[in-house]
Every structure is written in structure tokens, then in C-alpha cells.
Image (cartoon, rainbow, N blue to C red; front, side, top):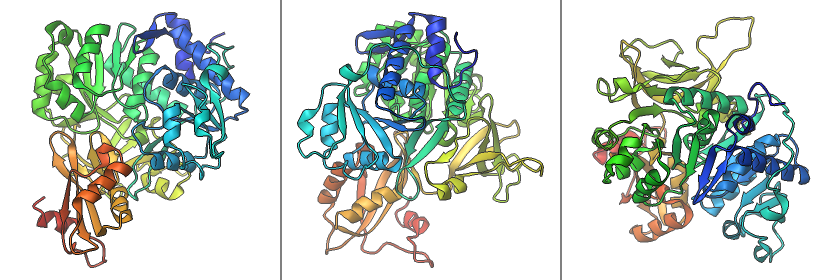
Length: 527
């Protein structure tokens, strides 16, 4: 018998198979998989994890581009009561190895070429016992004997298996999503099944998703908004078309081929897509388009509305620590295009002063999110968790334990009608191309080259990217070898983290505490 409620995110597929049968669930390249088959494949992956003797709570990392096996791994992991750790496929080997070691990953799902790239970086990942390769046995990368047991997907994952029995509760950990931290090292945001299911229900509700929708998945599945493309679609019986985004023109081609009705993207994506010539019939078919990860330029919004005359524009704000926080009702776009809207269903958003009291309309304060979307904290990092996850300011009763809320670190202001407007970040985190980037992580790479004596990375406002990364550095030698420095960045970091410009400065100003004075530095640079 099918469960009457969704406990784990795998239940989205279980219910989908029962409710939507062989209706299309997922398309990769030219192959479309229905809900029944997708659930069978996820059950097969869960059985493979049982064969590998995984236990509830074990971490299973997925280091792949978007493909059928990626989705099967994510939802099959949940069916086995393990924890999925989706890793951005553009990360460099040392970054991947850090994530694997940080959360003690036991099973890694990847491809032979990606495993080969990790050679020499897995020695410190002592927890890793099994690697499942989606495209072969990978014996050619086992020469030094440092790899764990390697399995072929075809040999170990059956195409279908007996569905696992519903187990556990919705407060179990479902996923760990890694995002940049202010101290440089990525931090793992721990999400429960409840976080993800409530988020899927909330977002699919206000987007109006239904079995008649076809959603183009363009964001990385390691990104909360990218992963939610799957959960929101499967919650409503919609069809997802996976796209590994490279060329803007491919977006038009896929929208035409699969009659796409909904897309969610980040500002750089929309700027590129908005510049395309859209066939009238294809653009008119789009029912909605949504933006997250930064403010969309008004000129781009206007072009998109002209290209998609029947589409509702949804401008959204969210953080990985709470999945999604606000959206602007499309009927308010013309009245207040700069607003990030109001709280999504089943969330409450507060604007608070440093002492925790509520701000008045027009008074800037920190955005605080409360409700069932609030994550558990940062993996194995109680110090950073206590900084961001703190008792909700409205908790005043002595008879109950305090309710935890997310303090975003973002400054916003509310108008008299309760609409919110983004002001800026309280910390120095850089928001570029939809990603949060730690200045410290960039600065550490500069120091590691041995070329820079001092280094400060900053985000400079940029209409296309949100912010572009600028590195100010003083040389160890007489002059700074900018070319060599940038080459080192390109080898060690994904492209979105590579500084767009390096500024040489003989001496970087410091404040009375001896720290680099970023405010004064911006003034000196005219930023």
C-alpha cells in the first residue's frame, strides 16, 4: 500500500508512480523516463546501497553532470535512508576531495573520467569505501592501489527492484549541500526531508506547477534552486528536461523540442537568454520564468517579458540554509520591480535589529527566516551553526525549547505594505553568477602561489554577474606577475571564482586592529 503522506523525498517518486503512472518524469538527451520506471530505477539504486551494506545516515556523494543516473542516485539514496551529497561538476579535484572528507562520504557515484581527475586527491578521504561508475569499471585508474572498491553501475544497480519499505521520519537528514563559507572553506548545509518536501510543496504551489508542465532544468543540482527543480516537478507530476548548460541557443532548441512551460535561472543566464531571438510560438508557450541568486537587471526583465508574452515572471530570494524565503507576486512586478517580495507559503520573514527587536517599515535590518524550511545547521560545525542558526526573536515562552531561525546576514528593508527590498550583505561574501563565493578562499589561492605577499578579494557590482571578483594584491618580489597568478587561479578554481581583474598595490591599507581595511580600500579604488 502506498503511504498517505510523504516522509522522505523518495516518496515524491513513489507517489508519482502511483498517481501519474507512465507520464513523462525525466528526459536526458533523447531518452524520456516515466514516473513508474524512474521509481523502479531509484528502488534499484537503493537495493545496490543495501548490497554495499550502507547504514541509515551514511553519506553518498554524486559527482556527475546532469543525467538520468544523477537523479536516480539522489532519490535512490533517500529511499535507502542514506544522505545525498550532490557535488557541483565544475569543482576542481581538491575542492571535491575536501567535501568528500569533510562529511565522511562512504559511497561516491561518478564517471571514469571524473574519477581519473581525482587521482592523487583521495588518499585523505579515509571514509570512502565504494565508488560506483556510471560508464565502466574504471580499472585503468587503480594503478596505485589507493582507490576504494570500484563497481560498475550496470553490474551493481538493477533497473528495478522491490520498492523499499517506508522507514524513518521526515526529520531525518536528506541532503548536505555545500556552499562557500565566510572563513574560506565550503560549509555543508544539512537539510531534512521535511525541509525539502515542504519546500517543494510551497514553491510548486505558488508557481502553479501541474502534470501539464514541462520544466527545463538548467541550474546545477548541487545548488538548492537546481535541486528544487526536481523536487517541485515530481511533487506535482510535471516533466523535467535535464540540460547541462553550455550555449544559450540550446535553451531555445530544447524549449521548442519539448514544449517547455517553465524555467528557473540566475541573472547571468537570463541576460544571455534574453538577448536571443525567440520564435514567437516557442516564447508564447512559456507559462512562467523565475529568477533567483541575485537581482535581475530591469532591461533584461523587460526583454524577457517581451519574448515570453504569456509568461508570469517570478522574482525570488532564497538561501541554502532555508531553501527559499520570498517571492514577488507577478502582479506586483510593474509597481515594485526592485522588491524581493514577501514570504513564500509556510514561512515567516522578519526584519530585525541587532538586539533582536523588529524593525519599523523603512528601517534597514537583518532578514530572519523561520518555519519548516530552516535547515539543521552546518555539517560538523557547531561554531558556524550557532552564528547563523539562532533562536527566533519571537520565542519568549519559558515552557518550550526555543525555535531556531536562520539569520541570513543580508540587510533588507520593508515598506508599509510589507514588501521587502534587498539592501546588501553584512559580511564580505561575494555573490557572482548565482554563486556565493568566499573572499578568503580566493585569497588563500593567491597566497599559495607564493607570488602575493598580501591579498584582498572583493565583489564589485556588475550588471551581468551581480558582482565580479577583483583581487587586490601586493607582490612578494618587486612586481606582481599577474599572468602567472591568473593561470594559477584557472588551474585551482572553477571559472566563476577566477578574478576578473588583479590590481597590484604596494601596500594594502589596514585598520587599527591590523586587519585589511576593506572599506577604505574600496574608497581608494573608487568602488
